[in-house]
Image 1 (tube, rainbow, N blue to C red):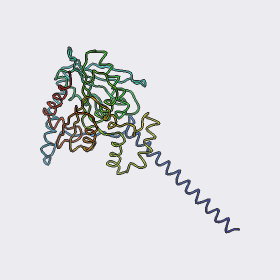
Image 2 (cartoon, rainbow, N blue to C red):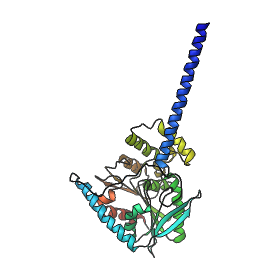
Image 3 (cartoon, rainbow, N blue to C red):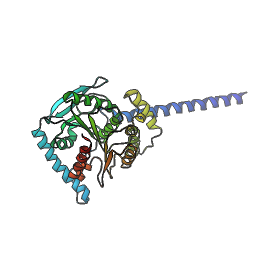
Image 4 (cartoon, rainbow, N blue to C red):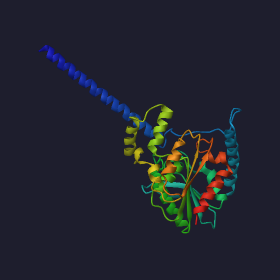
Length: 332
């Protein structure tokens, strides 16, 4: 009898240990998932900031030197542009009640418009080089701060998924200013994902062309990639806990936010751009996205030797010649 009681006590103790271990593991994974959400998309999170120096050392290759030189040239062009062209502060109210701000550079008399969309944890001032080029080409330029970025409200970065609905509101804003507007959407990185995610929605006839520069296939894919590269961790199980956490706190799940799926529904022209040495959004995502876009109203620009968001600096005028050639084909 004592032996039986002892065995039962051991079983109970073992069961309690297992239960305790499961509870601790669940708590640790929940904490990790919560941390990843805060880090990756929380407004004050630390994810994504990548500062690139304009200086290169003696070991730099030709591509790296050219990128650095063109960045310096573009910096001066940006300064001249901002000194001579007035930026008007504009805003909209999103569907969920957030005040979203942006910069507008009026090019009076033109019905050609571009919405320039910045990247991850950035703001519209960081894409002035795109705004300047479009303005010089005769476009009216609108460059919004995406939610939880810059001067716009919001607690969580939308990663393009929430932003797609905000861009639809900005498109309506453009049409309120100019009922004859012909609109291009041009985005880089997260802005490119925003462009692609918007492309899968029903857009007004006024929206003519989409240009995406180094966008990712999905939020799940890019965060899984970063989880491995930055922390050396596999996507299972942390991404799954983060996915649930994001759905509860941010209003969207990582696994639903797919640029790839949205691109598959896009019937309007799209230009795909990517650098082959991109260490943030893997270059292989470019071909996957390009192939998923239906129709023959598409093209690509491959920047051999360019890193993330560097295609315009490496290719210089060649980049813009190809961009505007593509746009001109479809603007009527």
